[in-house]
Amino acid sequence: MDVGTAAITYETPEEDVVTERVDNERVAYVDDHWVLWDEADDGTGTVRRIPRERVHEVERSVDEVERKARDLLETATSKLG
Image (cartoon, rainbow, N blue to C red; front, top):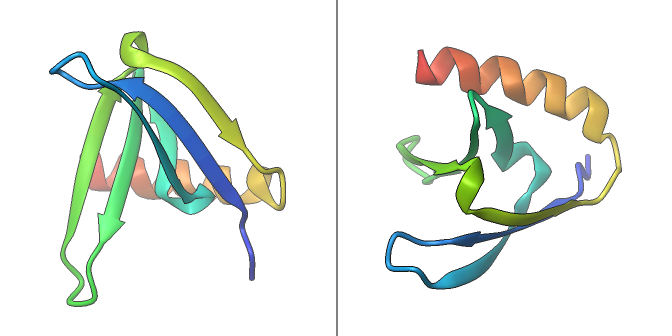
């Protein structure tokens, strides 16, 4: 099932501005941070929290975003504690 994509433009700690494109299911807004995570083939992963003050723009396609965002938020909240 295609859940669409998101593009997030943000400032890094080195003050560079970058844009990353990810699947909608890999980005969420939790506790004043945008959260991005990658999962490797072996099941390990990396979670990156970007403070909202550093985010310039987030564009998301709308295919099934509402349902997936709700599921994603629950998953991210449980992973972040």
